[in-house]
Length: 458
Ligand code: ADP
Image 1 (tube, rainbow, N blue to C red):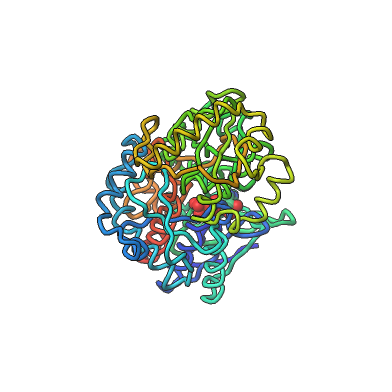
Image 2 (cartoon, helix red, strand yellow):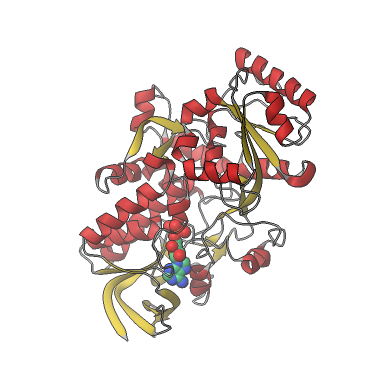
């Protein structure tokens, strides 16, 4: 079977949805192909937090000294300067606009008075969608997309890009749930928004042998790097493929990211089996992950008390996850430190000494051991929460090389006509290490540009 649209978008995560909406608003007939039975990708299961410098919640909270320049510097530095500066510049300059677009056009609701400061950021600047997950983003994007008459085809896997004699991308070969081949012709172009490759162990090992079976992944099963392979077949250039990020605090049995453990951003500490802190809790994800793997057993415990729990309310926001962790014996609520230590057989005397220091540092505002950049919070009073966690593969920084207009670039350095890409499938923004809250800012900023650009060039 054959079908014809102006624009074909591959992958219904945040990048694909925003590209589809923009292309549609610019007047194109758009189809959005998603290989899984449901839309959302990793965007859906993420925490959904989005960095935007100088945003409206910062203003409300009295944070008046954040700028696009600071965000630019944090992002470049966070990736050890391997992100492409011109691309990071675009991200920094447009992240706020992307957030406003989500708020005003897509009707995404963000918490009015709470922000996260993820590791590597010099300011608290991450907006939090209600419910603290990407579900708020994807639900609203899906509604908007359907309202506008974009065709969404789920269980429709893109297999290959089709090119004409001049090497221009003119369509996509796909397979539906029953195994039928379908050709989607694209009059204007194709936007690749198929996400990363964290769930593809073979591909991980190909680019970084260290990232083998010993790591589980936080990603959805659809995150297998298809778009990278499809574009590579046309000579696309890849960058930063060896940089694969682990998220430091995940479920030791399933690899699933822990969002309850977002209490870390409100002051929860990390300790080892011996009861000692071993890293600054707001360090970069790669640094914390490495530090955890170097501890006894290669895991960590996150410890916090009710005071901290009440700040971000991560338990209420993620009650299902909390109940599951308790049932699995991976999280324990205790009235006293003794009880918390006993549950996981942590050395109580060392833990008490650790907590005593934390309380001192909380009162002086100076963490002499690890220089906690958010300022430690006193753990003087219970009840306490203690949770076991391990690092798990979370984000692949590498991928397709795109230019400022999201054109996909080939090995010779020229544009592959008719092909655009945005989101985790691309590899030029985050360098060695993507900072928390930067994926969401990235996918909406460049997803929108891709959708606008594919129509503008026709
Ligand atoms: P991003 O954050 O870049 O938007 P996501 O992981 O949120 O990435 O979304 C990517 C989506 O692309 C996922 O829903 C995934 O299932 C889908 N996808 C991956 N490969 C294909 C493919 N070959 N055909 C269609 N959809 C795909």
